[in-house]
Figure 1 (cartoon, rainbow, N blue to C red):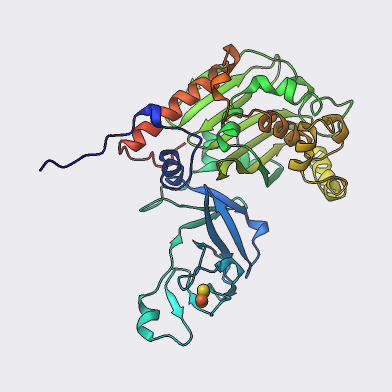
Figure 2: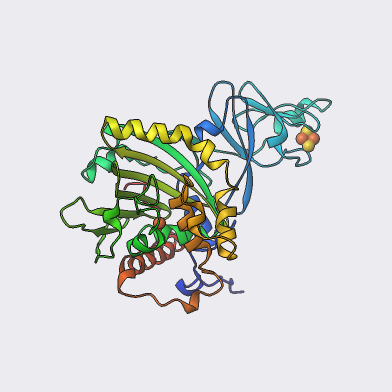
Length: 386
Ligand code: FES
Ligand SMILES: [Fe+2]
């Protein structure tokens, strides 16, 4: 009898948009470190449910300070471990008290036999904390090397760590993660999408007014991804790089110097994603003072409004305009929310007309799809070398 070999998936069947368990892009993204929480949002002894690429997990920080990522539910009857309690570096389920160590082994199961305790375990995932962000590895086997972020900055002519302001942040956006990955190379959106936030007569903080013109971009390809460079006359260029599959590095002018940022767009599911950013503002002492002074006022300004996503939805329904949120600290973000959530990208992809100013986006799509095809065909994932 002849063995039936399933056909290899063709590139046509591959898609960057679907990242649920078992999907090609889902497996591809799972073969890289992915950020899951800001360190400041995971206190010692705290547990949290997280959702990544259509799957649920439990995240907690043991009293020894280490973050731990486990399967969502308890080995006993699958109650969410995120509603359990941290004991030392272990977690105890709130339902019947089974307790699991940071390595996933069952340590106690009240009323059960020692042999059951011995053989029971939950799945845990490698975790790593850097630059104020907790990362996890959801793939099979050993995780790749963790990317050298400071080294990347130096290799590309900057020195992120020397910036006077080094900060991190996160936001949720209700659209497919890949829309926002591509957006990193779509520099032609900046003058229009960010028209209000780059106008100093309207807003207090935001992009430099110099970014407010469409210019031609130069596209460069690297082994790790694609870069778009936009030269602004007499000033430092805007340089934006996507490191496949879902990380990016940006250098862009701000009113108080320039911003260097490394960010990841991580699917929650196929309709929403989280972004995590490590930001370095290269500025002077006065710019630093202004940054922290504005940050201190941030909560008061944000409190005037519903969440950024809700504001964006109000705009998309035609109930408000961006000008109604001119003093919102997340205005830059809200502008992107509106443009990207308004794209109806997944359902209407065939209606897109990519043009000259999309050349970096087109290069990225080609490279993403060819790397995805290589990955599906069994090529090893590049070792996180940017
Ligand atoms: S479900 Fe966790 S101990 Fe029973
Ligand atoms: Fe933008």
